[in-house]
Image (cartoon, rainbow, N blue to C red; front, side, top):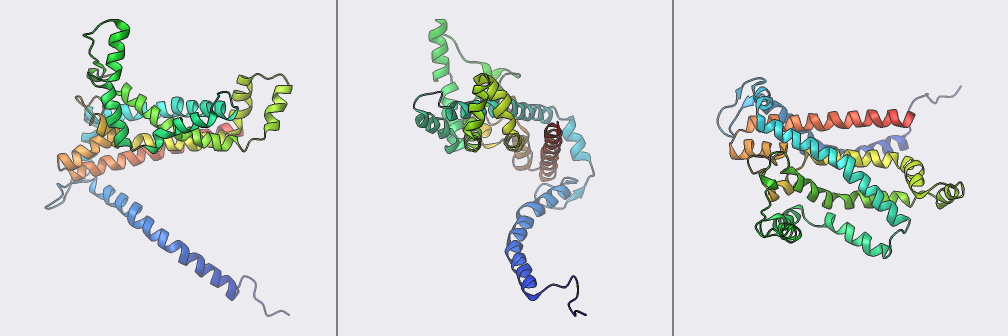
Length: 302
């Protein structure tokens, strides 16, 4: 009879497990301190009325009730959803199309165009915002071009004064900056698709558009889903570029939830309310990501 007990761990296995814990523990501690603890504190503070000093008063769901009754919050949520939809349905498809065109060498000076398209993502969001703010200013490039095209020297750009369309220039700038990131991701993954697959499609008589939509795009389903996660999380984190470009103005027409949270927390000194807004941002982001993951799994099964 063997004296070795089933399920016992050898000294070498125990040493490997300890080494594993030693490597994981620092990262886990950092994750708790940087992520879980602030989220937990925000969750608790969301049920309180606290100005950042003095006693903390528990008020239950009052912050959340006031938030969803506030037209400024609802308009900011609307802008966040518009940014998210434009990211998913405009930025990602455009990034894929540009990557495919560069991969298939449909344009001359391919490396030059790759470099030029990639530049925006390397520039600080603040610099990008200030640059485009000057372009859209009353004496900027865009109004000057429109004046020359229309022949109206008195034309003044008023799109930022429109409640429904003030967000459009912001969407354009976000498109200009973020498409390059998706292009690079798609371009890297296109290189993993064998050229023989495309050549076989051409032999079968498929057009370039058919290859793009029926052959290449299905091969990149997982990459499209990952980029969609980036777009969803990024849309609800939108703050720096919009703050530097419009600060949510005029009259909150370009507000997003991040700016709404900042104003209530640090301008109006309502830390409890700001914490509640932060929890809502997390819940919206996680919920939409879960829905997107569910849709992706259903699509892959089909």
